[in-house]
Image (cartoon, rainbow, N blue to C red; front, side, top):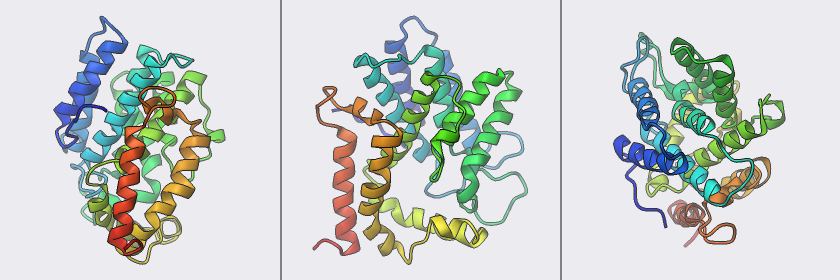
Amino acid sequence: MFKPVDTKIPSAVEAEASAIYGELFPGSDLAAVRQVFGWAAQCFGGKYDGYQAIDSVYHDFEHTLQGTLCLVRLLWGRHRANVTPPISRRMFELALVAILFHDTGYLKVVGDMEGTGAKYTAIHVARSGTFAEQFLTAKGWSKPDIAAVRHMIRCTGVNVSIAAIPFQSVEERVAGFALATADLLGQMAADNYVERLPDLYAEFEEAARFDAGSASKVFKFESVTDMMSKTPGFWQFYVLPKIMNEFEGIHACLNDPYPGGPNEYLEKIERNLARAKVKSGVAT
């Protein structure tokens, strides 16, 4: 069992990420972790020039921190299991940047007063990649490192073709699969996942109104109850095959002990799915 970490508190997630980073790469300067968490807080908090604070109700900073916590735990488990190829210190740092920036596509520019950032749901992955590139270029990052971050962010797309992502190395691909897996598991295993589904539904509704030609084809639900009733199917027919096949089963690195022990994230998701069934009236 992982120790409890409150994802509503950015400093708590940062502390856990720093502890894992320090264990995986002894002697490394923890300032690298502190810096990227500071960047993310700046962007989501409306303190980055030209952008407003995040106003998407479901895809808020806590959502990002849920995925971040899952990612560092997954990479830690993979390291302990001695799975090859190993993830280098630099690739860990790039993955951390990518997960913390993977939903910056929901940020609105200053002066954009129409709706919330949820209206960008259908295009938020592309917007996140562009935002990350602009931000990191201004920080003087190299083109290969920026490309790695963009490739990892692309892995989180709902209908992404993994084969079309030009990964620069096997290590980068593994990190991308870990990130996308953590994005899915981190949110679905959250204690308040079921309670937050109405917020997610509201975001899908707004996205469909903003871009009926694309968003409604992907995020079509009749009601919150309909979405809740379909959540178990979403897990069974979309998420589970995706993490097991496309992302090569990297979620097993969360098993304790590896490889055949229980997976706390999967267990929490199963409990959430059961609660969703009850709330939707599917299970009585």
